[in-house]
Image (cartoon, rainbow, N blue to C red; front, side, top):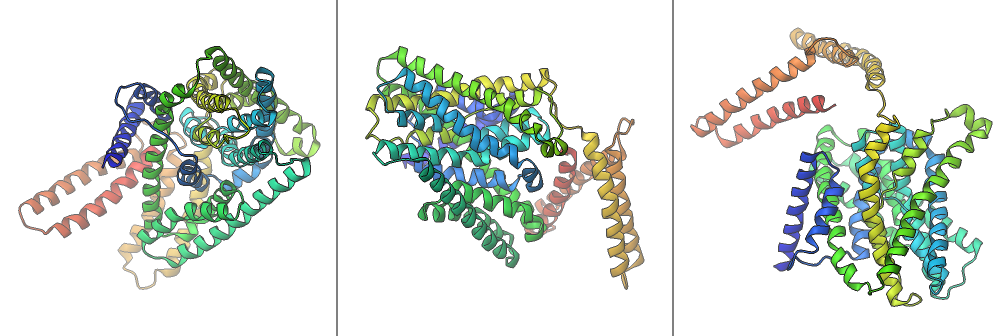
Length: 522
């Protein structure tokens, strides 16, 4: 019973923290992290401990899977070169930079252990990057770059951690064995991810019940991870590939009801997972501090050196990776040269997350002196806190100061209006083809609906009126829906209609109102 109570308390605190963050205009991970830090020192509050297996198999897969589902595959493909430079090249560069610095500070610690710490601290977190990048309002290409990096860099880091741990255990490590292991794990992950995605896509095509569609979607990331782990391939790569494949094809696989319902289910799950994870990260401070010995000077020196190396190495890598590649004529002709402000913002957007802490706890007892193992775990935790609090809080200010803003909505509206015009023509053609025998008033009503959608798209280009026709329609229709809903509730209370009639009418009104709300949000 105590465990259930603890879970309920954690979820409740995570929900309250997220609500407070929205009220104050802050990013939820930062507020929950600080809340966890404070609660870790409250006498009697339960201690928290995140098992690495729970994070890597139970929490990370759904987070990565949903992030991949929501990633634009065409945009991801266009940005593949810079994404790989960050997800592979930067992770290796950062890991060795941190390893060298830590080994200089702690020469008694094996170099392989220092490299393992570098690999643990190197990858920015998928949850942090996505949440903060979207909250800040960065350009779409920058968001794609950060999302793509965070989707793939964990695989590079975890493979490097395993190689370093193997070296600590006395396993001979050479260049070509490393290359072979990386290729085998990544290639196996791609094959497993594609195979599982094809099977899931086949199931989605056959299923007509939205609840079963939701169940298949919820099971997919966990099944992919378990199979990949059993076959000793990269489970992260497998989950990301499966998510990208299915996300690109969802419009053709699921019914409209299934898509709406699945989106709502996943949003709730990810909301709760993200909140609880960052709260747990903050709550672990008390345990970690208690395990660190009294050498405060060494702890602070190593923590500061690792944090500074992480920040500087990202800057050192970003500028050459951004501009040297454009010296190649083929790349220069295909991609515009971005202003210096863009790589600067990307360099500063290096927030770490729960994967760093989970990977740190996989450090073996053998080969690493006990004190230094606990020190490395504390440093990994401190890196998460520092990057979220320092970089996460100042990234909005930096992006505004450097003029790195969200893409113009006018361009999106113009593109949408043009495509909506083509879609309207296709809809009218389908109407004419299948209108035989239909009542004339129905056909005319559908024609007006097509015209209304086209007009709404053009209105978004920027009307000088105080209120556009579509906005006035939404405002008035919501008032009408409220009045209709009240009449149905009164009729149910007076016994004039059964509960089933109210439920059916309520669902129809709710669907229409949610569509109006979605239009307002967009």
